[in-house]
Length: 150
Image (cartoon, rainbow, N blue to C red; front, top):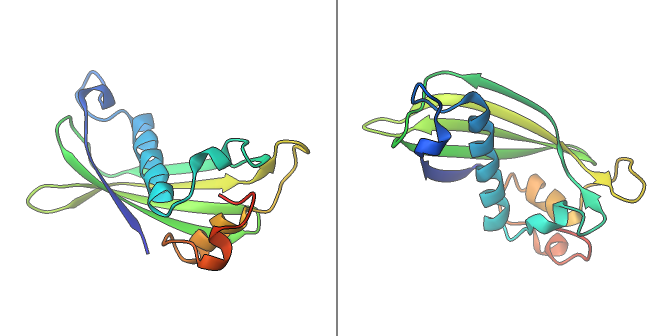
């Protein structure tokens, strides 16, 4: 199950040629990821050291299929995938909307859970695992209220 995020391309997203700068596409996908977490009731501050962990992006890849220009409407479909007890991936498909949606980019990021105290890998928080196992839906009730979860 994927989460859909809608956004208009702003002038600040574009380069001198008037198209979205390649690195900005990753930022747009990260916005979609953050919105998917919020929609599921997961708090971003728990990934930023609040629970003794951080979950940075360790790998990213992107395929750019067509340009995106200022003023265009986008839909970004974000789909999470649990890879291991301490790693998950996010797949994104960026669509340019209009009379017909056209796939403009595919992006994939991998996130690794790291302990801020030990500096080594740490299992993902239970609430995040619940969200990942539910393919991006709301976490199940048994994991949503766990202390130190997201």
